Image (cartoon, rainbow, N blue to C red; front, side, top):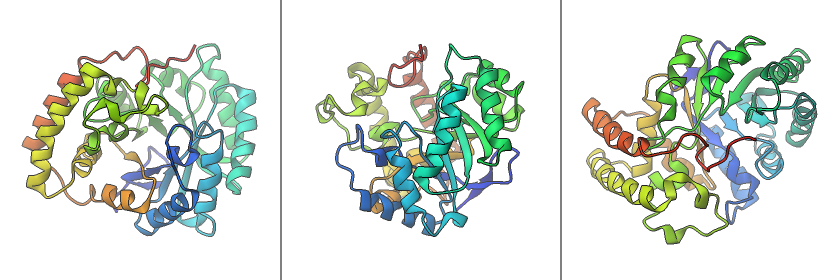
Length: 315
């Protein structure tokens, strides 16, 4: 498993991070706890040393499952979670996080979303406080703009930025990746498979139930979805040439983009994990990367980036 240094930290993290959103169950259909735990343990066995969760995933339930999954193996893994933005909430959330996971500290604690009504200096000041207390090793941010990150750095150092990024959702290429490279901030991307769209299993919007989290995803909306499918058909041809699956190809593209430290990929069961890990250890040709990038960028130009991938904007 290839590893890369996270920002200026002492952490060398795997290029694939196991995403634990689904382990919180809410919005993810049937998820079996024991299978989730088996997946976590197999990930560690396979060299994945970073697991990402959040309080917001099932109101802390994902954190509990991750804690069970790493029991007895804490020394082999870096644990990342996310919290709210208010100073009071941060101080409460970290204690609950450590309790749920049954650990003494967390390696990377990230502000899940900035809150426009709370000064970033206050948010980051609270993060710095719990870091000094030894409850967290490193600070990270998630879904922050360049201006918000610049403001955050005026208060305290943070080592990672967690934005959405995949072949279709390319917002970070304009400014965020450049800023992070300039300040040596690690970039841990989420949704590299566009919530399953880039696995090829979704060929019709009728497959998405109204209560599925994907039903609000901009990439699954009618006109965009149909255009994505055309790009996916092209990618399938390359996948066949490379003797890889579509998901492996999509992940390989992400982890080889300049400035990317790691890609967060969810897996409900060990078989999904194994497929995801097939994205590591090889590389698309420069011509293939260029053509996939070009076609994906055409989709990106059609997207509204004033809100997030699900149409949400903090109020």
